Length: 163
Image 1 (cartoon, rainbow, N blue to C red):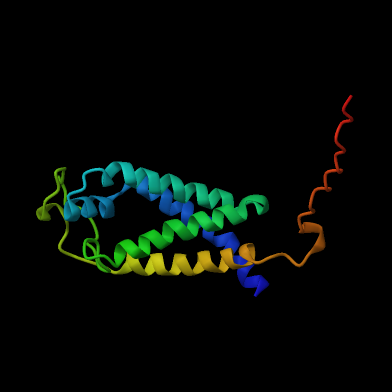
Image 2 (cartoon, one colour; image 1 turned 90 degrees about the vertical axis):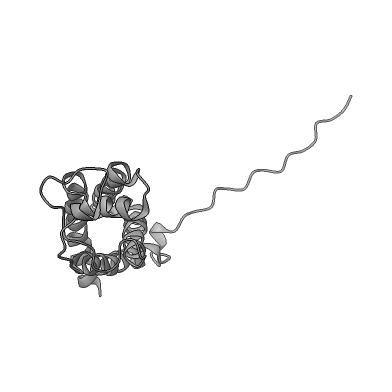
């Protein structure tokens, strides 16, 4: 199990950083969500926020001291992606991209008619990898050197004598 966890801890940051960079370059999923829901802040604002969070999670996962925070952030981001794919607005098989010349406000004609479940499958696989990394980080440590030590108790205070 340690080998799988170490391999996953090595691979997952690259996946997250790559996905985060793609949010800044291609954001058709958020554009499609914007078209479906009518919420006009999804692209580019939420798109950029999720991209920055994915890059941050990937960076945090690379360092032992910040791995717990990175794993929790990755679980939150990818869990949100899976939930978004399960909604009727995005679905498991969204369009794979935009047609040439597409521009906001989005219409059905702006999206390709070809759909794919590859983004959903990628989200599920990334969620599973995030769980593999997060579980050891969230378990209490059995190593006594990493167990927090309680601060010493404060000495009892004696009341000041009155004159």
